Amino acid sequence: VAKNPAQPEFHQAVKEVLESLRVVIEANEEQYRRDALLERLVTPERQLLFRVPWVDDKGQVQVNNGFRVQFNSAIGPYKGGLRLHPSVNLGIIKFLGFEQIFKNSLTGLPIGGGKGGSDFDPKGKSDREVMAFCQSFINELHKYIGADTDVPAGDIGTGAREIGYMYGQYKRLTGLYEGVLTGKGLTFGGSLARTEATGYGLLYLTEEMLKCNGRDIKGQTVVVSGAGNVAIYAIQKAWQLGAKPVTCSDSTGWIYDPEGIDVALLKEVKEVKRARLTEYAAARPGAQYHECAGGSNVWTVKCDVALPCATQNELHLEDAKNLVANGCFAVAEGANMPTTMDATEYLQKNGVLFCPGKASNAGGVATSALEMSQNSERLSWTFEEVDSKLQKIMVNIFHSLDAAAKKYGMEGNYVAGANIAGFLKVAEAMTAQGIV
Ligand code: NDP
Picture: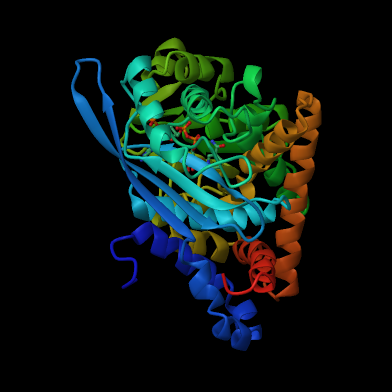
């Protein structure tokens, strides 16, 4: 804490991981101490902080902070998204980069952990302003990324439009047509099914978790928060698997739709119009709209399965109590660290199946790694090919964390299982590579 002051989200993520690694750490204490393995694990290999100046539509120069944290490259090139949101600061990027190490390890693919972004807010900006920002951001970042060194992707506020502008500028500056960013458009190296991957992957893992605990996703009522990339495709796949998703939310309000969320309408409102959920409610008379900053009140709706898909620390202890009281039996995180630590403990103590984001939302980065493979072989796989690989990866992730939890005497504790399974591979690679 003293070495990294004022970074509460980073401290929270490190605490959660290290606490659940206790048995593994005790078993290898002497070696980890001698090699300062944990100190090295929690210290990024490189942290880049830079100025991003750009000109707005009025001719005024604006200045934002740019970040890229290259956290750990023991098992592959740094890989992780770029978040564009006014709340972004170094502590948030470090928490996301730290989580990414274990998530990427869990996918079974050769990718290290990194994360980046800026406190730039794309909301309300014209396309030209977004392009000006993205180009300026890459003017600095291009020096530090590359297809075999660091491969950024999308995250909150960074979708296909932003990745396109960044890729164009990277190519212009370097002259390289390479898989340096993922989440690209389909006409220039993007992968089919990447857009859907995080939401779909969340449901594939949830389905497997339920199946292995004697339940079926079919017929369950599902509460989802968020209305962005992860939430939309989680809702779509929930329908496809026979469940009924009844809520969604954004940063100003939330929807309860007793008939189930209309995916086509939600996509139109959020992906095409980039509008507020009030427009969803206006077009759907049976749906209820509730104004609410943060959107967290979706957790008051009675459900069987809850999928937080908006942002960090959006599901608090009170929300966990509501979920349990209403009979919810499974929570799987689509967002990164959406559930606070006390809420997680409460859910686990009350017998709720709980899967942490680093496992259940790993489908996005896994498919990004598949995009990297396609770029390297200069080939494009079909939607079905990518989707079926994604499904296998998510099922494998669940079984590896389930097995790790059982092996270390914590059966059913998927938080511990995910951390242990993700950590062991990275620790072994770090040890084998010496003190670097
Ligand atoms: P989007 O920007 O597409 O959507 C985010 C959604 O969450 C929006 O509905 C947004 O509302 C809402 N939201 C964002 N910040 C807040 C906030 N502070 N309070 C309340 N609501 C908020 O992002 P994604 O769907 O891509 O990402 C969602 C989460 O999933 C993040 O935690 C991200 O790190 C994680 N994730 C994403 C992956 C991906 O492939 N996209 C992969 C793995 C994890 P509004 O529109 O009003 O801002």
